Structures are given as C-alpha cells and as structure tokens.
Figure 1 (cartoon, rainbow, N blue to C red):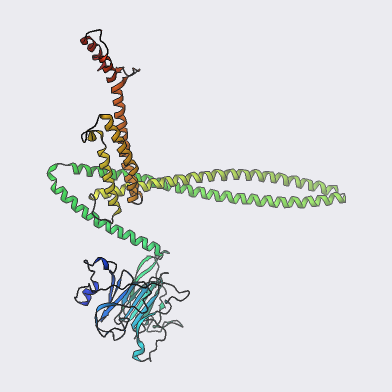
Figure 2 (cartoon, one colour):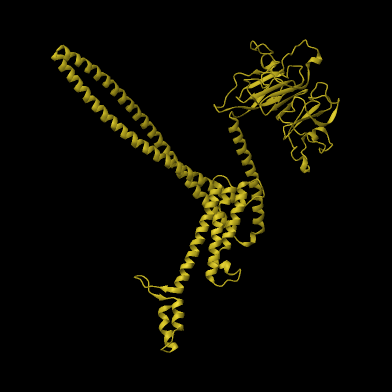
Length: 561
C-alpha cells in the first residue's frame, strides 16, 4: 500500500462551495501541479472532489449523517481529505446522493458512507427497527459483494440517486440498491429469496447490443435508471475513448488551422492565386489516394475470397487424406487376418480355401496400391494448396501494408488541406510535419546554385562536394520524422523526403557528369558527334603554335562549339 501525499487546497478561491468545488486553478504553483481536480460531486449539503492522485476530499454545511466520511466539525467550507478507510486506496470515481456517497477504487472495490435510511449504502446488518444512530455510517465501508472478497466481480462505474445507489460491473451487469431497488421490484414483491433493497440486486433482462457491448456508465433516480453502452472489454473501451479524444482534438485543431488559413487568404488576396493552385493539387492528390484505396480494397477482398476457397479446399483434402489413412489401416488389418487364415489352410491342406484367400489378398494389395496413389495425389494437391495459401498470405500482407500507407498519405493530405500546422504541442502529426518542413528546408539549402552564392569556394567541384556531404548528413537524419510520428503518417513523410533527397542526388550526379563532359569532351558515337573539352582546348592553346593563332582558333571553332 502507498502513503499518499495530501496537498493543500488552500489555493482554491474563497467563493461559493459549488464554484469552489468545480474550480481548477490555472495559476497553481509548480509544487501543486500534481493535485488537479478531475471530478466533483454534490449532495444536499455536502460535496466531494477527486484529485488526479486518486485522493477524495469532502466538505459541506452539515455532517449530521456522516456524509463527509470523517469526523470533522459540524460545518466545513474548505475541502479536506478522507484519510481513514481510503488512505491506501486509489479512487477513480466518486458519486453523491442526498445524504450518502460512493467511491470506486482502481481495484474495482466500492465504498459507501453516510445515511442508510433506505438501504442505499448496501451494507450488511440493515434493520428497519434499528435506531436512527445505527443508520449512520461515518467512514467509508465496502459495499456488500463488492468489497474485494475472493471471487468478487470488480465494479466498472457507480452512481447515486437521492436515496438510491447503482453500479455496473466489468461484465456489464447492473446492480441497484436503496429506494430505486424497492420501486423497480414492485415495492419489494418481486425480489428473489435472498434479495432485498438494502443489498445490491442484479437487474435481469438487460438488453444487449451485440456480444461485445454492454452497460458502461449508469445514472439513477428514485425509480428509474439509465446506462450508456460501451465495449465490455476495458482495453477496447479505452482504445475507443482515446480515438474519440484524438478525433475531437484533431477537429478542434482543424478549426483553428482553417481560421488561420482563412485569415492568411484574406491578407494575401491581392498576391495572386498560388494558394488556390496548391489547394487544387492537394485535392487531386486526395482523389488519387481515394482511387488507390478503392483499388486496394477490391484487391484485399479478392485475396480474402481466394484464401477462403483455399482453406476450404485444404480442409477437403485433409478429410480425404484421413479417409485414405483409415482405408489403409482397415485393408492392412484385413490382409493380416486373411494371411493368418491362409496359414491355417496350408496346415489343414484345404487348397480351395487357399486359392480363395490368395485371390482376396491380391485384391487387397490392389486396393492398397490404388489407395496409395490416391493419397499421393491428395498430398500433391495439399502441397500446391499450401503454397497457394502462403502466396496469398504474402499478397495480403503486401496489399494491407500498401493500403495502410495510402491511408496514411491520404490522412496527411487532408491534414494539409485543412490548413497548415497547429501550435498544439500534443499533436504528434504536427510535430512530424514541422520536422519534415525543417528537413525540406535543409534539402533546399543543399542546392549547388544556392550554396555557390553563400560563401567563398575554390571552384564548383568544392560546391558539389559540400552539397553531397550535406545530403548524406540529411539522409542519415530522416529517421527523426518517422520517430516523431507513429504509424504510417511518419512513413509517408519520410518517403516524400527520401524522394526529394533522391532527386537532389540525381541532380548533383547529372551536374558532375555535365562538368566532366565539359572538361574532357565526348567521343564520337553512332548518334552523337565528337567534341573536345575545355582541358583539351587549353592544352592545345598552350602548345607551341606552328600556324597563326587565328588559324588555330578557326580550326577549333565551329566544329567544337
């Protein structure tokens, strides 16, 4: 168990309790950044708040019925932690009724405290004839059946009504107790042998939405309750929640980017239609990606259909091979029996029976050979089918990867189409785009023409050498993009930059080739004429001249331009 640190909440503004309860101080000091409020709940004269450390605080105008879960003064306007039964527990949800409370721990254990007038605490020992003081639970106590005993089903969520309580287990089962239980079960007339309104009762006949979905969150009132529906698998539910939050964050970021883009368009309205051209190109790319997605989707469906046919054929061949093995076993046993009888016939000297047995044994050998040929044919078929299945699985993996890459590129295009980058530090895609743009700028800076104007160089070969070294450095650093963006978005960005890098390397190679050709010339071929390079020109120019300089230059001139 852990000993939690209970931070002071004195930083909360001294306003009304309801506002104070819901407030998250934006100006908290660094020391208190770990004590943020993540949930609040209120009752008739009390309130609870839950921090991100799983600690429950309570306050209120009255503690007559123990609803604060501790033994404070009669009236407390500042939240204080509930340190008794919940000291070693990490609480993930709280709920308040009129005069009672529920708290759910990370292990799925449910605690209750406060007024137990209608059995809304779900504790053992409730009695209608008990004195009023016995119906008050001043500290958190485990709810019956959900207290962490061996074999209990952990609770997923909980809720309170004025005098009612309810919870949903990780199996999607809904339990109710208190006033709502009494009214739902016909004023107690429809209870089972061991059920009553003072302990949790499972609600039977709950409708299901498929096998994978069931109740998630529950809300309860006097004689009514309602549930939300989610994945019964907590892992799938969390994944759905993460996807939903990411989609919402992306939508909000898209709105912000669209507004910025619109502002830029208004500011640059007089500069021409470059933005419209870029957007048109993005739309064309988006259309191409959609067509690729449709084509790959059809290919995947075709592969799946062929795999299903291949699996069915493999099952058929396996059945045939099993039949062949069974027939071979039966024929072998029959042949052994006939051999034994034949041996007995030789001993008794009965030739007629011996000839009959020989004929039967010959037939069995013929059947076994035929059965073996059939088995070999089926084995060959199975081998071909397994090879076909392996080939289809490889095609499926390749097509799936291609589709994911196309989807990643399409998503990237849509992000760009919505308008640039956001300032949201939590957006990995935006971070990846920023890194990709910085790499693109580095690639642009390696252009030999750009480099030649940025410093003093001894010649163009030095410029090309520096450009090649810079491209090599950038090539080794492109993995930063895929590392910053998970999934196929990073792969798509990296592939775009690699394509840019290849083009620039090809450009440098072409410049090197042109430079070498200008220096050394070109040998004549069937399709191209010969011409001399600059080195030969200067060599001839520096040689002793027997002719006049004009004659020498004229002999080099027109045919060597």
